[in-house]
Length: 157
Image (cartoon, rainbow, N blue to C red; front, side, top):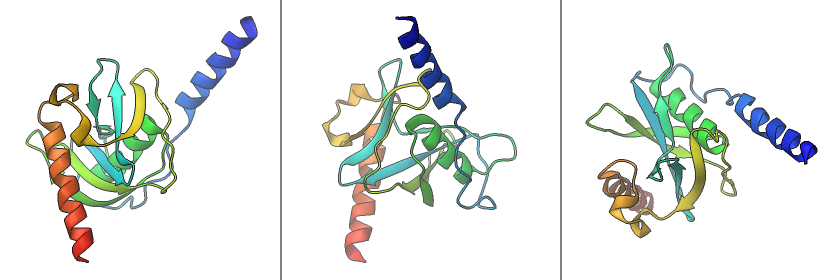
């Protein structure tokens, strides 16, 4: 029993100590108070669920001296364990949150990387979630709209 507790503690601390990969474009863009990633593929949008039970996009606070783009990539890694590349600014929300479209490897498998912040990370179709399932009111509609816009622009190219 003691060995399994020790092994679990090592895994937990190891995941928390792992640092994010370098920013894809460290010189890029504006700063903001918070930023995140919309990562979308044929499996759905990459969403995280916190301990309150609400689903959201990976994201969080921007560090002093960090660009919003770099913060979005870092936060995605910290919350899902995935290395992502921010491709473009999708929207700036009314609260100043900078949301970037981000790419991950097609076979990427999210994992809970910060268990004190996130209890689950999964590919989900936002349309299948009840509006009350979102951490922030109206977030599901915004995400669905961005996904439709992205799909249409990709189709037109």
